[in-house]
Length: 594
Image (cartoon, rainbow, N blue to C red; front, side, top):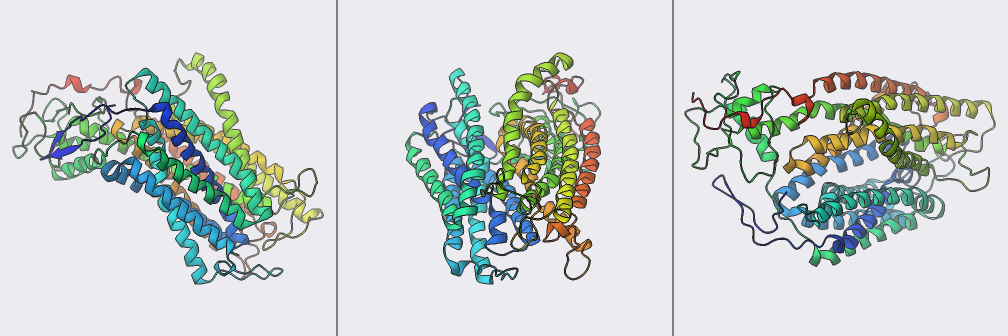
């Protein structure tokens, strides 16, 4: 893919590309700044967000339901905002400017949260026994301002940081391709490293030493991230925006609506506009009969005009078959995307309530006085994922390859399906463990009272690691499968939007998680005290295991739905399209005007 560093234009609907000079790719020389920025940024953002749930319930004295819903909305909005970040980056400002502004915004958000912990006037007073005072409107407003800055930062950083690092290597040389592959490995390593440090050291400081210091550490790390990023400005390859690929999607949809009364011919060689833009970075796609109604946008009428170079005079009324097939690639992934949303709803809820389960479990290490922070138990999910990936890649894939004769062992959709099946088992394990924790809390001596909740069960919190490990293996199949699926099935000029599409799925999962929790909370409440609620403040009096069984039922229904849409889906390229008609088989001169 050619990089356009200084020149882009679109004049009167015609593309104009002016290569001013070959970019000076610094490659490895730029990596200390890029990787340094990535590392400090992830340490800052993950270190701040990992323990927010505990912060809201212990410092801001929020109820578990309120805090959970707020966190879900926060994560959902952060993920959904990546679509806007990708749009601004690809259309107007470029990745460098968006990353710079987003990094500063993240730093400001972390600074605001640190101030809420450091100054007593910015958070409620400590609870007295079981009596707790909630935050004032002013305190809540100040907190939400911090969340707003963090959301803006995440919206710009998440869709741009990986692509910006890859921009520093020449994709047309062998050394550049190796550098890009190496950068992806280091990118994943920094993510894992940041998760480990955040879930252990930073969470420990926040929970056992001081919240102000615990939040100031990631804030300082984010400041270092900004400094490192801007110091490397002079050696970066800064790719200029190339216009929004979303425009192409809207053009096809608008043209289809305008020609909705026309009849699509059975033979694609008739009445279909087949101009292929030579400057396009997208690979030629084979014609297929799925979503056939969109082909109306390529029917040539007497009102349509064609330029001297063969291109459409008005792309809002006449689109090429290639353009339509690219739009089909995006639309066909939407049913799979719906399955991602429901899949992630249950796991999101389990991850949230695992922290609450840990708070009312024995968190002592070997019965010592040292207590593992409640949020740190989610590290087992990342550990399982980190260990499982090389096992799957080095051991399972070669064995599966011998059986299926497929390079990847199994197809992407099959890999996702396996992850969804494991998710059902994950929720079953979580329900069984919660039943055991609650039984021990009622039948055996407890270990004191967790402030604002209830008695601490004598069950070791390390039993919660089992459900997190199984969840990690599930994500090793499903989430990584989804990442690769969207990346490969989207057109080449929409790779950043492919990542945003994934994050938007996570956003919808967060919103639906909040909705599900609210519905269950209201519909299962018995009495004004709410102690028999499935999701009561005191888990010993709640029925969280029932909630996990409900989530398991949702996973079963989602798995059945996924099997149906996966059977319908045709890959962008591969054996499933062997019988389709290739674009090269449609003559560009054979056109029927109606």
